[in-house]
Structure formats: C-alpha cells, structure tokens
Amino acid sequence: MKKAFVTTRGAKRVRAGHLWIYKSDLQKTDAAGGDVVTVFDEAKNPVGQAFYSDSSEIALRFFTTGNETVDREFWRAKLRAAARRRPPNAGTNARRLVNSEGDLIPSLTVDDYNGVFVIQTLAQGTEKLKEVFVDLLCEEFSPTAVVERNDVKVRLLEKLPLQTGVLAGAPPDEIVIEQDGVKFFVTPLAGQKTGSFLDQRENHRAVRDYAFGRALDCFTFNGGFALNLARVCERVTALDISDEAVALGRRNAELNELKNVEFETANVFDALRDYEKAGARFDTIVLDPPAFVKNRKALHAAVRGYREINLRALKLLNQDGILVTCSCSFHFTEELFLDTLQQALRDARRRAHLVEKRMQAKDHPVLLGMPETHYLKCFILRVVE
Image 1 (cartoon, one colour):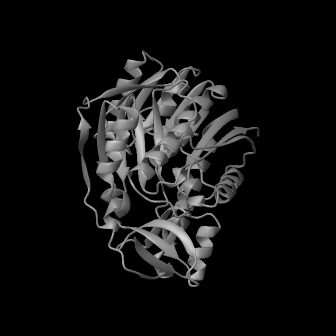
Image 2 (cartoon, one colour):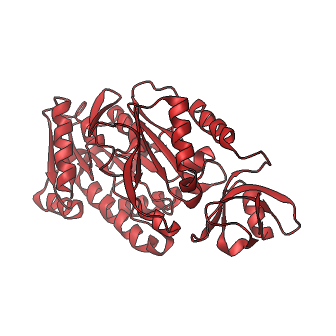
Image 3 (spheres, rainbow, N blue to C red):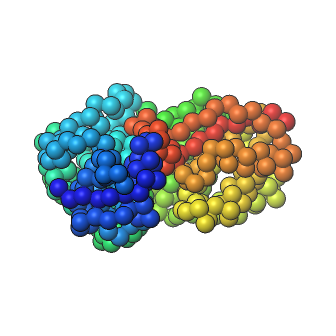
C-alpha cells in the first residue's frame, strides 16, 4: 500500500469530519495519481485511507478512517451501504444511488433513471476504478445499461479527458421518468448534469402546497418547477435562455397533457425588467438560477446577481404572493442567502414571511463536517406587505 504524510492541520481537518486534504497540507507521498494511499499525520499516527490526486488542489479524498483491506469487496460493501440508506422510491422511478462524498465514495456519482445508470467519476481515484464500479453496479443492481457523463469541466483539474459513452448494456436514446405524478423525457447522454435535476425533485413537489394564480418559472430547464406549478396554478409562464431547454419543456408539457403552461426563450434578467415596465403581476414566482458562484473569487459579483433577480421578482408579486428562490452554489451560504433576500426586500420595500427552508432531495445526503455537501438552498417566502 502506498503512503502519504500530512500536516497536523490536515489531519485535524479529517478527524473533525471533512474528507479532503489540500495539496498545501500534503508533506510527501510515494503514490501515483489515482492510487489508494494510507495517510499518516506528522507523528506517524494513521489518519485513514484516501484517493491521491497528483494534479488537483485537493490532494487526498478520504473514503475511510479505518485500516480495512481496500479491494473489490470493500467497494461492493460501500455501494450496498449507499443503496440501503436511500429513502423508499415512492413517487419516482429516478433517484441518485451514490452521492460521492455524501456517501463516503468521493468523486463518484450514480444516478438511476428508470433502470439506466448514469455515472460520473470526477477525480483520478474513481476514474482508475471505473471498470470495477461498473462491474459491481451491474452485479448488485442489474441496470439495463450504464453510461458515463464525464463531460464535466472539473475533470480538467484532474487532468482527465472530457468524455461520454456507453459502459454496459444498450441504453435507449431517450427515457421517460416520473416524479410525483409528473413525467419527463431524459436523454442520458445529453442535457444538463446527468440528464435531469434530481436534487430538486422534492422541492418541485413542495411548490404545489403554496403556489396559486398566475405563475412565473425562471430558469426552467426541462420544466421541473413549471409542470408542478401547472398542477395548481391557473396559468404558468416558463423562461429559459436556452432554445433547447424551452423545446424540451414544451415536449414535457405535451407528455403530461398540460395546456396552461407556456415556455419562452428569454434572458431572465431582461425579462423581469420588461415585466416590471409593462406592469405585469404574478401570484407565484420561482427563481432557480444556475450556479452564480463557481469559486470564492466570484462571490461578490454573485451576491449582486442574486439580489438583482430577487429584487425584480419581489416587485412583480401580488399581495400574499409566493416566491420560491433557490441557489445551488456552495459558497453562497444559507446565512448569506438570507441576508441577500433581506436586502432585496428592503430595496423592493416589501415584507415577507419565510414559510419554509428546504434543501436538496434526501437521496443527495449531506455529510456533517463537510459543508460542501450542503450546496442546494431553497427558500419559500410569502409577501405580506
């Protein structure tokens, strides 16, 4: 087994619950990129076992603090444990089966779309074991197919190629999944993320408890919020800057035989200003933008962006209107998000109740001690003045 030695600071970080040690806290190692290493602190006490990366700022990704034999059966047990922890599949035939760090298999994600598994191996360690993981997934869960969506730019930090492809079986070009009574087309080898936004599923369903009247869904993608809004609202307008996303949203509306939702291609920032100038009003507005914050350096500009869209939305809401506002940026913390919302309320001269605080779906578990795993925030507000 290869070894790595880390600073006291790095060891303390892992013992406090985090799974990463950065390059600055790595003292020495005899490992090559992607190797499994046994990690020791400065006093030569064992810290655990981790994947080593020779190119990323994240040098070590821990998957155990024990000294188990790391072989094929070790990873089989890890996959079984992740599946065992999943909530019941009630209401959906699509779920996240493995949530990387959240399931103590860092940099590996596995999504199950009605029997077609979509995997991502986002660091050197899981990439090196990709064939092992595919074999084990087939043995344990018998998927109809396994495909990889390794076209994510974070792989470039690991000096890994961007690629997609079929790893097992013969997947259809398109799949229909169902989430709480709403159907969606999914193309596993295309589209955003691994084909859909499974982390928002429970939030998509939750809006039905609050939404009413005329609704506006911003950054709609495939209509995840819009189609749920259409179940309870009189009329829904869904906006996205992507023509491809708008076309997919329309197809999904037809699939669900929903006639009260319209999909339009638009820049949301411009559209919100135009609605305000035209005197348009809504009873429900959903804001689910892409991540504005990719790193800490972009945080200041991102805060301005979040404040801007929430301010514009608040100005468009009727009395007792509902605002559902989301952020999928880890660096944009819950505390900062709430502070930004308060600034937007002040500037809009509105007051609101915080009706509900939500997060990513339960099949995207948050690992306490590792705040990076709690990335999705979803707040539901009611404007009362």
